[in-house]
Length: 334
Image (cartoon, rainbow, N blue to C red; front, side, top):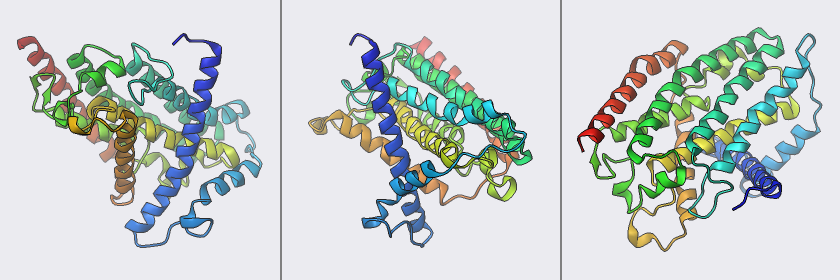
């Protein structure tokens, strides 16, 4: 499809709607899930099963005034929430949901998404620094150190997949996994290559995705018991709302990438089930991953900042580098 201004506007509009709808109702799903896991009620008053709670929360946030603290850097303070949400919206434009549903297919789709994602860490730094709040500053420093630590093993793991497929095009990576569940990169058999560490690569990527989206047990940047609310302590109204939407949009993007790189994308788990549209399989996979992320948050306790960084620098980075070297060696031999 020829890239025109109209196509870009339509794609971005759809991406914004999809991100906003997911952010609203993933909050509802998380609150209901937390209620089930911790044996307490979730939202259940507004509408059947509390389904009207997300739009009512959105209306409440939009009706509130954005208050800028005295002494804050106004330009950065206002720009930070927008910068937290914008990269997620742009990333949706490059993500394929099936072999036909994609706004714009990039040959370097993997690289583009990680380039967009890197702006998220900058937004957290801007939010903490511009607030002139000591808790927010400490939170932003934690968030940036966490992002640096976990982007390395995540990128190394993605390079492993790129080595196997020989492409950074997300659609071509999914095509390389076609043929059923045993061809997905979650398993050791990948494109005729036996690599016993591919399952570990999937787990490394999933752990890094949790850390990159600041989800428990890796939400040290928002540790309420230590830092009040973290980098968005001074934010209210839609400033807070944009940070919240950005977090849930990044969860969806992380789940999409996990599905595309390791779980066959829109490929059916068995060829006999291929009559079901690919987009349905894709959505089933990403929402199963999101359900797992919600389960992890409300089940496992928060770790410490030292344990968080040691996990990456001392365990995940060496393992991902070893797997990269092993994959390169196996490809050379084969």
